[in-house]
Image (cartoon, rainbow, N blue to C red; front, side, top):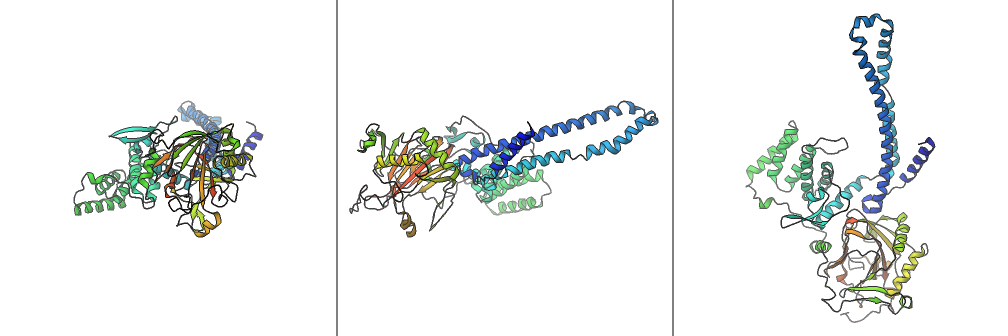
Length: 540
């Protein structure tokens, strides 16, 4: 490759690395960009290896030449010394050639070039928060879908049923986790004082580290994993395990004073306490203080819940829908009534594949970490892992086209200020949105309701498909809807009397595998007075 082309590539790399992708774990699109970043690093590493191989070949030639001299003409040292030419070359080698080999700057120049290339890419590389977020994403999938940790380590998404591992999804492209991978996941949980998860992941790390050689790219070691696992067991109350693991650690690190102290402490605690039964040693997931509906939510993410079939409830139906709008007469839309209470409708093939692609591409430059209402402000939250962007009709023609189609099927005025701009969302690693209401509740600030108006309805368009997970779950109504590519969900958030419908508590289940994109349109009460007439009847 010419130096001119190399320069162009370097300039391009510098240009993309200046754009901070930020919180990479919150968007699968950011992960795709990270793949490109690693390809650039591979190019730098390839150049480094080629230069180092050349340097080592030169050293090997020097080594071979000197070795052959000592197995040849230097067999008789007295004769060698007598020859002034041989003596001169010996002195020259020892004074000049050996010094040039030992003190060569070429090795430092090669590694400096590799480090400089890495520095150029740092702006587009994951940060510590991305590693932590990705690890938490895996643990979230483990919990919500009741996945077997040993299966995850092997690249399988499995649950344990009647003592057997059952695949809930088989990825077309599979990969395994190393001991160091498991150690880092466990370390994230450990630092959060989440010992339920740290025990499971450190146990896998120890199992994989045993009998394998340490690699320079690893952050953890067998000793590190044993140390953290022992303390994690101690924090979960399993003193006997903490003791046995600490004793194993001393075999690897016999002079570790801290571990000796821990062994004495654990032995004393076991002497003071009655023996623990095997049943009480079972690791139990701690109760959730933030998610009161956790069990129902997770069940709905795994199944469709109690959603009735159409043949079981004659009030549910599928049809070709025009809503009396002339724009739909020639091409009615496919409507599926999912639920009556709350009223939830699924419109099939609401957007075309080309429209969905355009919306994703328009949103890409504006994607930022999704936020939630926090009093009068907005902030990021662990219960919503995604990135989002807002698109205006005036900037993108396809948005206006979709807005008009929403109006056709709902009869609602979706133009600002009667509705919000189209919000496009891309979910991240294990991306999710825990149970929440779209409408303002008694907990919402008065300023929030005054500023935005209450959201009378939600229209959610699925802009992509996913391989597994990602359901939209309605918690109190006890049903969930899988992602239907190019389809759209519509529901009323408020009763006719203006009161919030508690049955619309819903969630975006974590994505197991796939790149989930949705577009949300929230419609306000203001401007819909004649389209969605209110009622004074408190029962409605």
